[in-house]
Length: 439
Image (tube, rainbow, N blue to C red; front, top):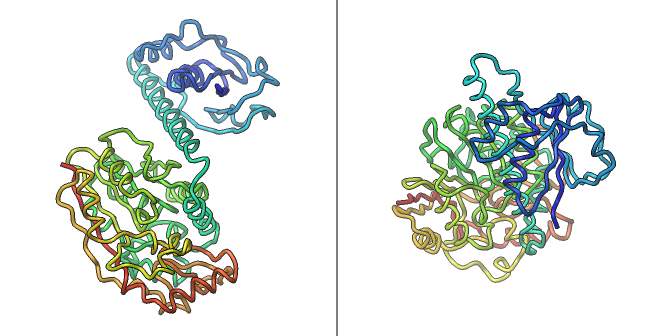
């Protein structure tokens, strides 16, 4: 069934007109786009017509319309593209979703016609990128409407962590991050909420990122590594975060806004189906996330697909040194905590080779996975989870599992704590640094 989107602006002469045409082109067969304005100009800007004609899209038959023409009509989505429209547009009762995408008004550009046309082209390309990203993410979400029990549990638990209030302001969370390689200076350079103690390494320290590069973080969480990477690649580069948990992405975007960075973007997706074009990325990083993916070979193939030739992988993860005890390996919550989802070090290495990578290294860092068992009553391997909200500077008793989540109930908490009391995680698993290059 074709979905309907209404794109609103003030004058309905530039941005919303280009967005309508681009949406109908990119979403052909799946979406039908319309546009309108709260104070229509009565014409379509000639430079918008020229800019779209360069893409083979004819705006000659388009007209400037008042939003009242669509009053009462049902829409799956309403998108406002300028601030005045956001403030003055009425609520459409039939709209299932409303979004605001602010774009610079190209009609305000000054100078010779060719100079102004360049501004229209730039806005046009930004609109097309935004629409493409949205439709790609929406397609991905539909493909995951019925996630596996594991995916559902992972999303639930990580979503709870995103709302838990854990941050570098808690001494235990900060100690966990520092134990796995983050410096106090790095943690102080980003919003405290970006660090929730979910790490098992520091991939940005080993990725050798350079200004101008494009880097993708698989499972970006609250944006810890994305923000550190964004600083390293600079304004001429870009850091992209991928996460399948809406709450984490909301937190990551809030942290990016707090940081004031412009060279970041975030996508809702699973890491085995990346919403990115082929050969578009210089480096892929990840921090204690690939072990959570049920289909790791698919993840490795996707990483190879999006990397440019010569692109590299710099990942921190958990891998197995020997088989897990049966009750630990079969425990779903241990999987959510990274332990039962981990694969053997040799299997990890071979998986990357099979995906076409060269110069593959999977190195046991020797880091104590129970490092924070010594920190304020915690236990487990790579992340604190809260049984209840702690006071600033204190940390609640940790749940269990590597990259562990809050306990769903007291019985579960007791079960996981019992598992890690009886088993030394370091005997079975290791924090590893993973390196690889796409030929």
